[in-house]
Image (cartoon, rainbow, N blue to C red; front, side):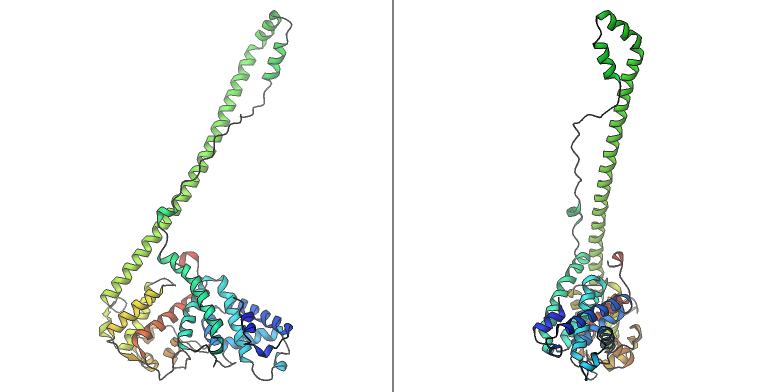
Length: 394
């Protein structure tokens, strides 16, 4: 998705006017910021999503400040062109950088997917509603494939295909020999007596030559058959390993579903060795979100969030919570520590009491809803923490 182009076509970046040079500088700044997010500031991506979409984000917010630095490196007179703070331009640079990053990095794409869904649900996109909605749909489609690969892998039988066997070669095996020339010379003898005399004198060498040709032809034929057998066995081994890997993926998906259903039906925290019903509603929301994070892979389908909300709703007896109640809960210590990045996410607000645009301090949430928001935040945190290797994605 071309964020800058989409915003320009929708007349949402009027500060740039119709100056193509300005547009090029903004695009270059977005590319520079994307490179920084991938190489040095991966953990900033979830915050960048919130800062780019929230209309109330100040220019001093950490992601927008990074966007401003990138823009100044491409446009030294940026502040002269805009005496005030063109926050919308900085938001556009930030959002474009996030889109560039998530296109090539699966972990950051999934992290942005979690945060974007929360942001779209909790914050009004305002004039940017259309491009933000399009981005959410694109991310949802891309992440759906990641989810399917882990949670609904193809069956082993669908991956097992026998390799093709090459057609037998019709051509002869070439052998260098002088027998043909010798035979031609003998056939050209003047009479039978001369033929017999010459053949008799060379008969031993002639037989040795014939046997030598037969031996070399047999050896070459055996060599080729062994090479074909090795090639076929290697292809069969590769296909079998693929089928076994597909079988393991299927079994892992079944095990994962079984573990989730067991967790839901028992409503018991193995980490705390206590049933959730014995906890305060705020503790239930946090504990269940943390426990679910430990159970599932780095990306999970929406059904998992519904499972979480249902469990917490039942264990907390439909109670409501606030950010302050979550911050005062005993289980708050189980959440990752707060960061100094602004705008703050829900975890930051719970751990440090800072304000977050996601949920206002005086806003009440059902415990189930709070658990879902915390779970998404936890998932995004660990996805953005470091690059995910292919073997770790399952």
